[in-house]
Structures are given as C-alpha cells and as structure tokens.
Figure (cartoon, rainbow, N blue to C red):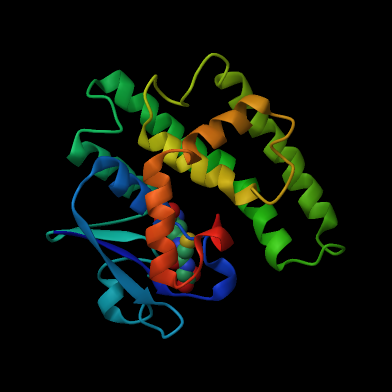
Length: 219
Ligand SMILES: N[C@@H](CCC(=O)N[C@@H](CS)C(=O)NCC(=O)O)C(=O)O
C-alpha cells in the first residue's frame, strides 16, 4: 500500500498551505489506493534519522510505495501519474509538455507567489513593502505568460487535466487572499475550474479532518 507522509500536527498558521495537499489531490484524482502517515511536526517527529531516511531534507511531502521512496512534490506527482497511467499522456512529446509546465509552476511561478504569501502571513507590511512590490511585479510577468498560454485552452499543458494543473493550481492558491489574479481573467477562470474538481474537494475534506480544522477555514 502506498503511504503519503503528510502533516498530522503542524504550526497552526501553515495549516491549509502545505504541499502534502497537492500529493493527496493527485492520489484522489488517480484513484490509487493509499494511506496517510500523519507526522507530528510540532512534536519533532520529522527531526530524527527515521524520517531522514524517507525525506533527505526532512520535509513533507514524501511517499513510500511498497519500499520505493520519493520526496519532492513535483517528482511525486510525476511518479503517481506514470504509475497510474493517468494525468499524463503516454507519448514522449505530451509527457515532456507536462514536465515543462511542472517545472514552470515550481521553479518560475511559485517563487514570487510564495514570497508574497509569506510576507502577507508573517511579514511586516511597512518593512517588507518594497520587497513585496518587487515580487508583485515579477509575479505579473509570469501571470501574463499564463494568461497568454491559456487563450483557447482549459488546461495548462495538454487538452486534458494533468499533474501540471495540480501543481500550477496549488501554486496559484498561494495568493488566493490577494487581488493579484483579478487582472488575469483566463488565469482566474483556470484556477476556479481546477479547484471545482471533486477530487480537490475530497482532498480538502480529508486534509481538514487530518489536521482537525474546518474545511471552510482552509478553503
Ligand atoms: N521542494 C519541496 C518543498 C517541501 C517543503 O518545503 N515542505 C514544507 C511544508 S510545505 C515542510 O515540510 N516544512 C517543514 C520544515 O521546514 O520543517 C517540495 O516541493 O516537496
């Protein structure tokens, strides 16, 4: 049975933001059977050598598929798609297109969006104002690129929904508390379309139950 290492207890301000959500979403989409190992981050469960053997940086998420261990959310999603034969095309060109957009989500789009989220959540509005403005400007470049890419398309990589959409939608979710998507109607519609999927709703419900919070508090 495949095990997802996710959070069971974690610092309350980050509940609803953690990257085990994207892996659970992919598992729910593929229908692969899985169990969750809920890690006690606040109690130090991730700090010891046992979890170090699962995750090189002692981070969430990781998976253990009957002894095959994978860390890094992007790698995990690609593995799950390949294993399930779903959420990724079978041909090399289609698969490469999915890989391209997984990297775009994680290495290009996520950087400024994550920083904006961290400043808004934990920063000092005055002291961080310049840095935030720079990040908003950079985010605008990538959001404009997404807006162009989404002309006439439902999904970012292929005609069908893929793991690249799970990564990109969860990355866009990092700025859901801002108005930054308002100037990008195709990106906004894309984000809403992705999060309207029943598998995302199941994921949110399972995650909320695992962390002991209400779904509405993390939506
Ligand atoms: N690049 C990694 C990042 C993983 C990561 O930053 N995980 C955070 C939660 S979202 C974590 O485990 N933080 C706990 C810590 O820093 O101790 C991925 O995409 O999986």
